[in-house]
Image 1 (cartoon, helix red, strand yellow):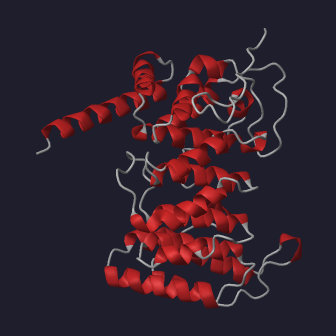
Image 2: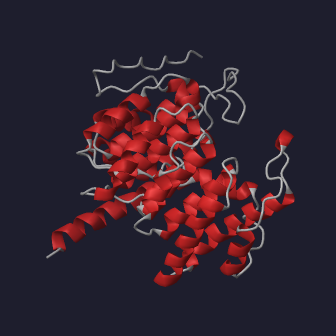
Length: 353
């Protein structure tokens, strides 16, 4: 059976046409654009799923202890360093339960002090945990602390900077785009736009997702950078292309909206793509196989996760069709939930005083 050739990339001067995405999307390691996958990865590595002690103060004491030899040659780690990382993971997980403003201010001060005085430059995991925790605490001075680590040589820390920005701004739930930007965020947007060109794909793709959350349709500088990111050459950047397209669609950009309707929410188009490898290894040949239904579902569900911020009529017409006709129960259910949300938004707008 012959396969349709994917569309050729449009010139940079034509923002209304998508880049070539056939092979890119076939290899997607699909992630919802609006969730912090890097944090999950780090937490799993360091045992977040183990039983968590109840006392955050005890964890702070453990966090301040010496790391011993820290990270050693051959990837080995001193047990004391692992213990500090686990304490940091526990603290990050417990922070949502700390609601007292004075307690949160005190924890912020303690974490900044530990970050500055008790963490060596090569202890990337501890840097990452502390930056994400500082973001969660959302103190006014926290953003400056986070951005001060934007030039770290460690990709894990750069990812943590992105997540710290997102959580500090309290924009990780995937709601509708903000109408007005937060004034203090401009320095953060500069960093995130720079991360779109990061050589590490995970850093670039996460920055694209967060930019779609934090900026506005009037931010032409960010839109221009996202367009370039969507067309960035190299199959290792396939998740970047996807996240950039979703972010652009959320910002009302025609190129992003076309990408979403032409492929990411189009089961017939997805079904014609080669079933390339999506694992951690380099993508391999499909052997003539096409993308299976469960991979199609993952792509569509991940795209629908960001649809609340999209206002393109064709996207919503596609969602209406999916709610009725898609063969996947999960896709129909999610599309139906989105339509109910949209109807409620219209009702609230009409009845608002």
